[in-house]
Amino acid sequence: MAKILLVEDDSNLREIYGARLGAEGHEITSAKDGEEALAVAVKAKPDLIISDVMMPKISGFDMLDILRSTAETKDVKIIMMTALSQDEDRKRGTDLGADRYIVKSQVTLDDVVAIVNEVLSAKPTPSSSDDDDTSADSGVGSDDSTQATDDEINDQVEKFVASSPLMNGTPPTPASASASSTVQPASEAPSQPTTP
Image (cartoon, rainbow, N blue to C red; front, top):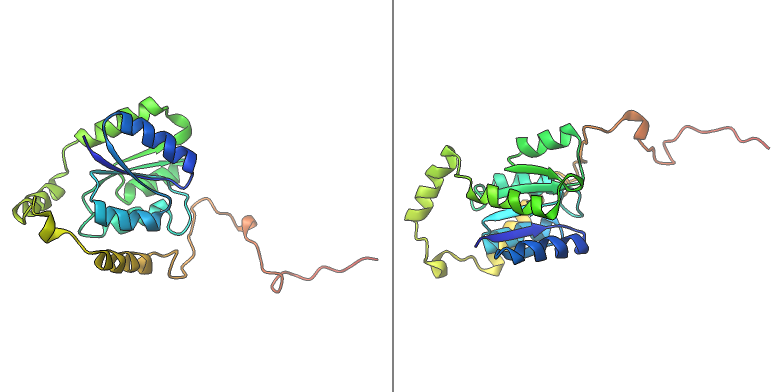
């Protein structure tokens, strides 16, 4: 059926979702974090990516942003599947280009399968259908001439990582962060008088 890249840092969930989607006839490839997923996405060219958000190295949101701004992956269908249920998180996912945003605690495995089938059967948006036409004319089926080498893929991943705000020193700015949750380093913390 479809090639699906499953991006999940929890190995148990990766195995459960992978087994269930594999039982539906899908070819499953997995990655344990956003950085690995970027490399796999460029190399494997999946039909669909299902990704967690809170992961080490590169978050799902940063990965989504990079995938949508990269020519080779901008039209891949992407489902964000996460524990983050706040409206701000859902809006961020859809604003970054997720085809669907689902909260893990609100869906069953059967729901996930139904959503996957729905997203896979959805027609491409008008803006991406023009791109699909040009890719069809550029030699679909000639895998040998279009397949990137491992060195090229590694170079692309390094570019992805370099453009990620988390990797270039820009701290994430969660919408729900409050001033009371800010932690000051000990050197900047106000001094407290000691009492004997």
